[in-house]
Image (cartoon, rainbow, N blue to C red; front, top):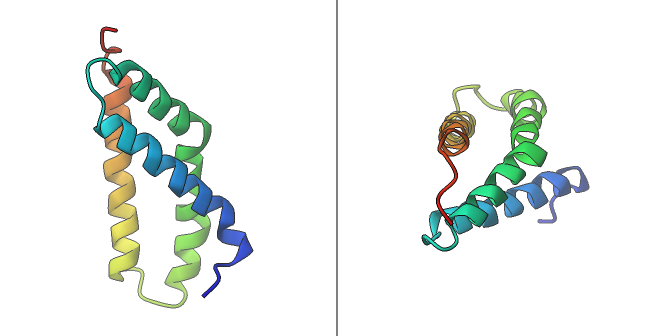
Length: 98
């Protein structure tokens, strides 16, 4: 099934977010500062806004067709809370020594 063109931007943002998160997760002492900066740049430029679109537009639309407590809805909200917490933690940590 081809995804709706309306979801293309969200899909690209997901892909970009996964790349920077993976890079951060796999960072070594030598790459930690760059990985942190890339993640925080993503978060500030598109990540937090992406979450707002999903929570303000996509989830309410989905909840019109299923229960607002459906596993998929709960999973997205829970994942968003966890990722926001982690972003705050990363932003609050001093940059690693280079």
